[in-house]
Length: 127
Image (cartoon, rainbow, N blue to C red; front, side, top):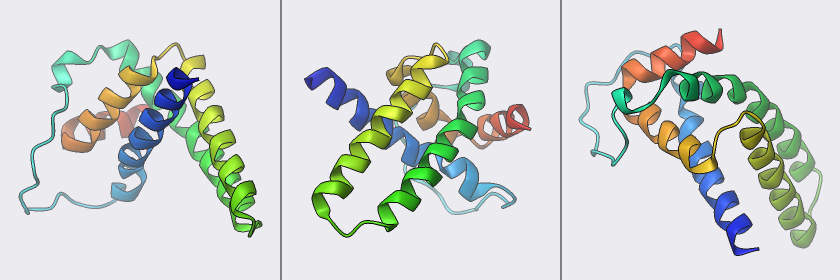
């Protein structure tokens, strides 16, 4: 049980980071300095894992959209918590179905968030 909760928490954090892909789409790079993050260098990520990461983004976005709609439709906190856990488990399954480990997914998401060139590479893979 603890392992599942840790996976879900890790994935949700990564999803928050990887959503930068969608938020930054079409924007130019900012000249502001950003705080450095501990993320693997793009050269540390193998191409197969990067392709899996890119491929699962569409599925994860669909899951986020589906559950966002469900969450908007409930005012019961217990039901909302259950929906959030269900969404997280569905996302974990989606990531793992690609053959990626949740921790690897998280590392890639952090690298994509901090490396504009890597982010661009993932965007190209998604199209």
